Amino acid sequence: MEFEQVVPKSFPRNLLDKDWKQRKCYYPKGRKEFLDLVHNMLVKDDDVWLVTLPKSGTTWMQELLWLVVNNFDFDAAKSEHLEVRTPFMEFEYIVKEDLKTALRPVEMLSSPRLIKSHLPLPLLPAQLWSKQPKLIYVYRDPKDALVSQYYFGRSMGFNMDKSLEQFLTEKIESDEAEADFDHVTEFYALRSKPWLYYTSFERMKMNLRKIIEDICQFLDRSITEEQMNQMLKHLSFEQMKANPKTNHIWEVEQIRSKNKLPYEDHSFVRKGKVGGFKEELSPEFISKIDSWINKNLMKQNVTLNHLLLLND
Image (cartoon, one colour):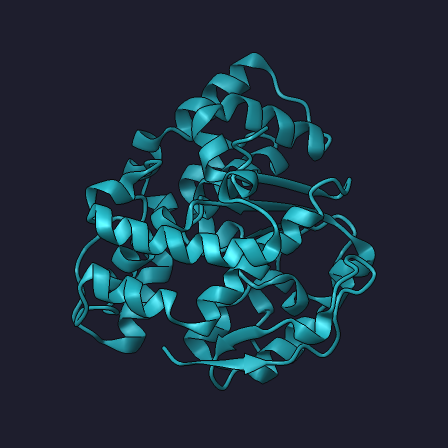
């Protein structure tokens, strides 16, 4: 997929005091009109937004949020695909490339809407910066996230001509991957705002109960001990992996149908580990990626452990 640099129509200057003229944003080539549509999109006060980089624990948090927002309706969750209940905002346009219907899945949701996006802060709807609805951000160690991206891509016919190390080498040499560090550090800088909840995949793995309690408090919802136990079981790795409604089958089948490429079968919920990259990459290559991460984070004056909330 070819990316191009895009210039946002405006920047969230009211949120962060930084040199926005130096901020570089990238998006798949030829989709600027879609980004303009998103920029002008109506945001509702009671929206709940989930923003992440790809393969960062998004689906795990998405299912958690949907259940909290919808009063722990496990039967409804098991009867409909997650991506139908809480749409990935960019997906409709990825598949159909029709500006008239691009935001329809989001617009058709009843309130409160739970909306997922991978867009960086400057490319999200401008009303989000002013109305400041509740927003949850999840980050993950880039090494695990990128390995997971590789296998998920292969399940749709992408990366079939590349080894994992070839894919990762291309990634860390790309401009758009460097911009991912702006993606996370901007939300990290906003983590103390009352409308934003920032966490990491690693923190979710360490203490899921605490994350659920935090989210309930953040969204002003109560939870009983019975509901908590149901949540912990439903959101366990084993249950998430076995659940056809949380493995993005609905989305993957549309991508496969559109592109008609040879593919491999990989479960969307694949390993769900912290540090799983160690089973996939040589120590030398891990060191190479770590150097790339550290070089970029030095510019941001933050460490990876800070972003993963492992120093708290």
